[in-house]
Each structure stands twice: as structure tokens, then as C-alpha cells.
Image 1: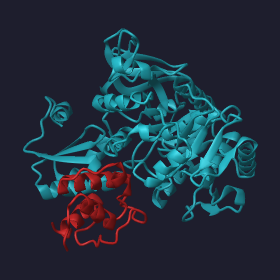
Image 2 (image 1 turned 180 degrees about the vertical axis):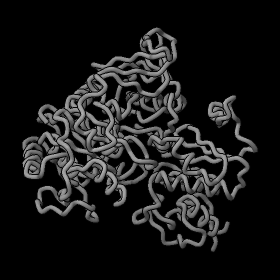
Image 3 (image 1 turned 120 degrees about the horizontal axis):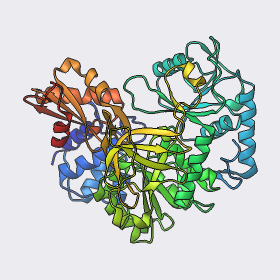
Image 4 (image 1 turned 90 degrees about the vertical axis):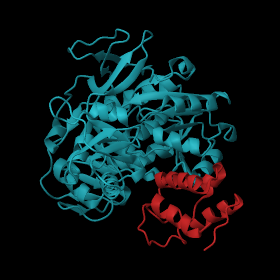
Length: 80
Length: 464
């Protein structure tokens, strides 16, 4: 699958503009990424990639990079 | 304030520093002494989730100084509006100087500003606490709460939940929000520990702190129960956490039953409660052992309270099965609202009787069931929103109607395409300062109308 798909999921969940660079995004330091946005993000990742995240994955999903790693753990490999 | 702070009460911050006993009392007294040197009148304080902010709040109560607590994210414009309308003597807020105020220099108060303009009228001597009621639309009214109300509700909640000195509760909700503040006051009153933890339920740090400090109970509003479900919350992983409390709007009975089962499986409990800022915080509680046979109920009045319904003829009744506006009586009922500085001088306008604006009925055992609203109000992530204000703000989009969904706001727009629906959603979320997942949008060919030509809100709500 395309990495761009994950970027789109992040932009939609965090309500960021269409071209916003998200690859370096982290939970800390982004005011759009609050607990409500986080739940939207988790829901969108689960729906969009057909995975179920466990408790630790939900609270460890603290950056774009972590999201990519967690998806890889679930067998979803994203190519740029 | 004599009586709120039990000698054994403690605050623990995220780093593990403990403030309790004589040290806490001394800091509160010190803060009160600093406030005594300020010009007389109301204090307006930003209320972030920090030990310092809690000490400021307790210091104001101790000094007999009415304190208005506001969201720490309140912007400069809104602060200036509040300052102009209510003319507080002191602002315990940082940031840009507010017009008519200048920075003060007492280091004990942290960042603060003193009023230089005309002072407001002297506040009523019974007034202790002022809280806002709604989200960001319109000009917020303040709820006026007396010293007696604050103390009575803290004590009643502590009794209803059986709180004692062994309890440890985290600040899982904002402290400027009535439910969050009542977790603080009820635990301080019971001589328990409050863990001052600013991170949300979705953060690793929150759960690390829960386990490190042996948290025993967790207070949450409906959207947080949705989060806990998605987090696959399992109390077996937190051996001391055995009590959940819920307030802040209706939680779907499926989720109530779900979390009751999770807690019961480990010998724990879920308490469903019903409250309003206008009643300081909480009015009823459903005892955990009655939850299975009273699913959907919010329970019975807290100690000192009483509930009746007014079916519309002005005659209150406690007859089982009659539906009407819920009328609550108790020492925790507000003195009234304030919209201007002059209102802060008013005494008790309500005499301990609160017409809640909610519809409900009592069952044969005196348990209350909340069934709807008499007012055009929705809750979005636990925050009250005035639906008429939302509609007015969307007038440029043609005919729209705003109705309440389950902890969400639903906007129905006539003949709107996807692009317009997306714009409406973004505008409303922006105005309310919330995530857009709190706003649902739908398009219809024509809004259903009542016989008098107004939007048929009931029909719309049934469809949502």
C-alpha cells in the first residue's frame, strides 16, 4: 500500500490542510493532535488498513513514524 | 474555607511530589494572605491542571474571595470580554495584559493582573465560586455558587461514593469543568489523594501515573468511555483501580452495561451520576449494586437532595411514571446566573430549587430516568452547546437545523452538496473549538416543518 494513504489519514484526522507535511509529526508539540483527534486517527487507521490495534499500540501511536511501524507489525507495508 | 480541606487530604503531582497536611494548609493560607492584599472583589483565575492552580483556587476559597474559574486556553479576546462584563478585581492569568488591568508584582500569586479601571460592585458575601456553563458560542453566563453549595456537594458526593482517605483519584477531566472540579473537592473533603495529571486518557504518561500512584478511581464523561472502549480498557491490568464514575451527559446503556461488566469481573464498581453546573456538580447517583436492575437510570438524589418532575402544569410530582421537567432541590443548587458585574452582588434567587431543563421520570423505587431536554441544548463531548446559536451562526448557508445527537451535534442543511457540508462541519467545529468528529452533517431536500412553519426538531432528532 502507499504511504500517501497514511499521510491522508493523518491530515484528515488532525484536520490539517491537504499538502501539510506529516512525516515528522509527533503527538507532543502539535496542538491539533489532542485526545479527540487521537481517537479519530486510531479509528481511521483501523478502518483504512483493516487492522485492530491493542491498548499499547493505541497509546504508543505517538508519531507518524510510530504509526508506520505499528502498521508494519500488523503486516501492512507502506511504500513511498 | 473551613471544612473543605480535610487534614489528611493530599495533592500528588505527575513527578511524584506530594503536598499534604500542614504543608498544604500553609500554602493555601499563604495564598489567601497574598489575596487579602489585593483590591477587594472577585478573582478570575485560569484553571490549568497544576498543583499551583489548585492552591490558588483553595486560597481564594480560604480568603473568602469569590473565584471565577476559566479554561486555561481562553483567548485574549474572550478574557477581555469577561473582564469588561464582570469587572473582577484580580486576574490570575498569564499572557497579554487585559485592557483596564496592569501586571501585579506579588510572586506568591504567580502571573496576575490588577484592575485599574472602575471596580465592580461588592460581590454578595455568600458567593464563593463562579463557573461557566457552555461551549464557545455566545457570551457565557456564569453560575453563581455559594460557599454552602460547594461544601455541601463535596460532602454529599463523598458520602454517596463512600470516599475515604485511601482513595486516589486522578484529574481525568479539566478542573474548570464542574465534574472535574467536583472530583477534586469531594476527594479533598474526604481526606483522600488527588493525582494532578494533565495528560489525557490517550497518553502513555497518564496510565503510567495511574499505576505508579495506585489510582483507585477514575471519573469520565461519555466520550472518554468511548475512548476507554477503544483502548480496550481492562481493569485487571490496574489492580488498585476498582471504581469508575460517569457523569457529563447520557452514556448509552450498552456502554453502561459493558463497563459495569468489566468492573464487576474484577470486583470493581461503576457509578452512573447525573449533574449540572447549576447544582454545583452532581444531583443523583446510581449505586453500583443497583446498576444491573436499574440500567438506564441515573439513580437517586445525593444526600440532602430531592427530585420531582413537573409534567407541565406547574404541579410537581414524584408519582412513578409521570414524565416532566426534572426539578431538583438541595443545598447545592446555585444562587442564580450572572450576566453582568451587578449580578455578582445578588443573593440567592432560587431558594434551593433548580428547574433543570431536562425531562425525566421517577420509577416506583424513586430512581430517576433522564429522557430528554426541554431546552434547545446539545452536548458535544460533554460540553453544553446552544443549538439556536449554532443555527444563527450558519444562516449564510441557507436553511439549516441543528439538533442533538448522542454526545454529538447534528447539522441538517437543505440541498447542501458534499463540499458545503464539509465547510459547515469545519465552521461549526471551529466555532465550538472542538474536533470535527463532534459535528455530524447531513443534507436533506427539504427540512421537515411543524404546523407553525418552524423546523420540526423532533422529527429530525428521530432521524439522526
